Image 1: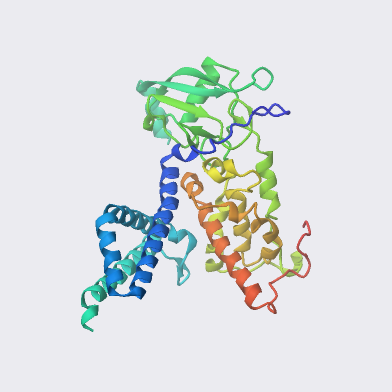
Image 2: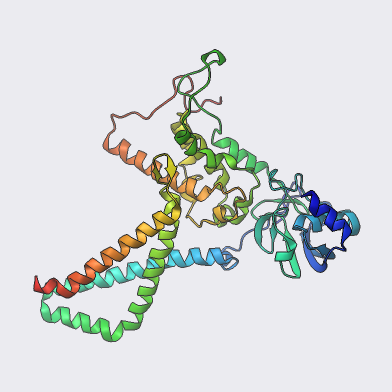
Length: 134
Length: 271
């Protein structure tokens, strides 16, 4: 598009700009991952609702999820993992911690997130396995 | 460095023929830009800028582009090299394929060939009041400000910007949203907001926290990836978002607490 002053504007492709660079693709994947997580949250809320209706209803929801939604769950799991990992890797930018006047290395901040993630996952996993006995 | 030069003259330099596709645009003759191809015998130690200088000196005197220092300090030779915003003095030809596409920086109006119009960029920088707004006026006779290393550490990184505009070319939000004041301007605002001598944050907020400021940023992060000076504008913007959000809730929950303001300069004053 040529302007009146002779300058030329080369506009960004409105819908396909994100295919132009690998960093843009990684960004779009990160953003899209939230749709999958949002979708699965709704599925889980449905499960809670079925649980409130009784044991048989909850079991039928679980069976439906296993038989019809298994592949989808795997995809959601992949995107949930990608979501967490990609956000962990950018947290040092939003969270510039300092310790006795010096900036904490980004690797330590990212590592702490990984550690917390693993610990909380292990905790949930233990609850899942042994929780019924308590 | 001197040794390198003498070796170069003693030995025959290694030469590789590289094809350069360069975007050309002459506003007086062309309705739109087009690509022109040049074969350049590149030497081992050449950066992209050397090859472009070779074209200018030996092949085509009409090629227009900006450069000055040739050492990644002045920030004037930024170009799109194979689609990536980079300082042309800061990327080696030997690390590139045999075909290299050179374009002017994306997301800027092209004035001629590889030269872009940077007036809008300068206006964006000025819009964030990029100067220290002190709590009270201070004359020379009052002496200097004292600042601890920890206080310096908080903003020093953001002073490193050389206004090369690579971050604007890397940022898709700059290209998609007209009016967005962009990564470098917001990093500059953050630089002054983080300075212990400055109390101008609320004065800058009108622009910085508006719909042309931080909230246009969706944290693509490309600005920080291309920044040759590791200013990390993406970090500056996310931290500003957090501070602005905290401000909002503070105003909402504790309306009786007034934000820090300068006594001599009211928000809106130009210096």
